[in-house]
Image (cartoon, rainbow, N blue to C red):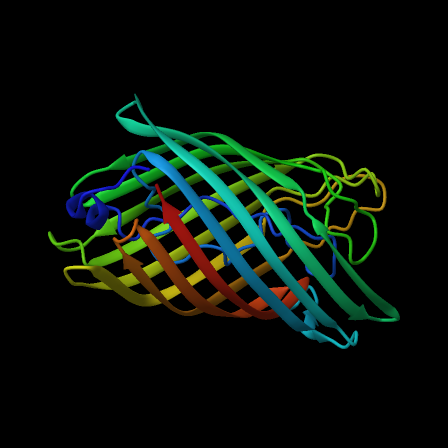
Length: 301
C-alpha cells in the first residue's frame, strides 16, 4: 500500500473520475452515460496509484416532458438505484507530459418503473464500461483531463425496466479545472462527454450523438488532517443529432440540473474521500425531469 504526502494530496484533493455508467433502457432519454455522477472539480484526475471508487446514485422522476418542454401526464413513477464500482490505475508513465492511466466500471443497478400500464422492476449488472486511455495534466493553476472509452452491451435489454441499452457507445472525455488562488482553495471545473452510438439490437434504431457537460464551483477549507469542500454542481445534456433507422423519432432530448455538494477528504489511515450531492433537474425536453442524489466514496492506495 502506498501513501501520499500531504502536499501531493492537497494538490489533488478534489479529484474525481471519468464516468459512471448507470445505463438503463427506460422512460428517460439518457444514453449510456447518466449525468450526475460527478460534481466539484470533475476534471481533476488523481496522481499515480490505484484508486477505488463507489458511486451510489439514486434517481427519481415522476414527470415527462414533450418536445416543447410541456408536462406529459403518463402516470410516471421512475426510481433507479445504482452502485457503480470503479477501478482506476494511474501509472508513472508520461504521455505528452500527462499522467497515463486506465480504468473500468462494474455497475449494479435496480430499475423500478410504473408508467402507462407498465409496472416492472429489474436488478442486475449493467452494461460494462472500459476506459483504456486516460490522460491527466497538472499545473499550478490548471488541471486537464482527456480520455477514450467504450460502453459494451453486456446486460439484458429490450424491456422498459431493462438495465442494458442494447447497443455500443464510444465516449470521449475532455475537461479542465481552474484554481483561482495560489492555495488552490477556489476552483471552477467543466468536464464534457461526447458519445457516439451503434444500432440498437432490439429496435434497429441508431441513437443520435450526445453530449454531457458537468460543472462545479467549489471552495475548500483545509486543515492539518482533512479538507472540507463545499460548492454548487450541475450538468447539461443534449442530443446533438437525430436518431436514424426505420421508425426513428426526429425529436431530440435536452435537460439541465443544479444543486449543492459537500466533500470531505482525510489523509489517514490512507487517503479517502466522501462526497454527497443533490441535483434537481429543469428545462427538460423529450425526457424525464427529476432529482439525483449521489454518495461517492473514494479510496487511494
